[in-house]
Image 1 (cartoon, rainbow, N blue to C red):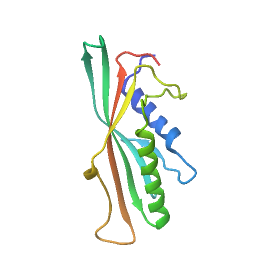
Image 2: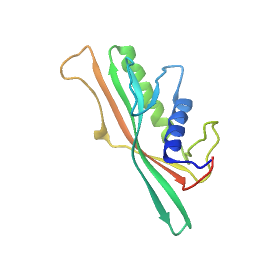
Image 3: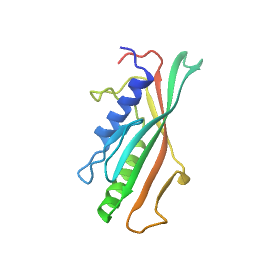
Image 4: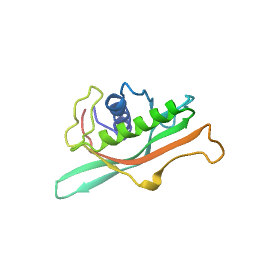
Length: 153
């Protein structure tokens, strides 16, 4: 089966769900567009762009996906804030791993794939100027996933 952008996006979301869940928190990972009606925070995976790159040095064509991963929602208590921060910290630890590769649904590395994270300090906030009872959480990072064009899983 050929690995498409859609397949890679869903494989990445499943990979995050497997790798970042912990005993401290359970945060749902959703691929957008998706209706989310949960209290607290969720991890949203959104496709921003997909394109083909021809790299003559490596003599192979690759497909690149640019994806936004957001820890988003509301923290309505100190426990909610603690869980939001635990999710953000877990994402940080996992996505900064050396030589991170896209995984198939069964958890095996997909050969010649690569995952790279880019973050900006301006991309995130935990704030609500209108209330001290509820805090909005929005922590964004841009992920670049590279897979061989036409790869089989």
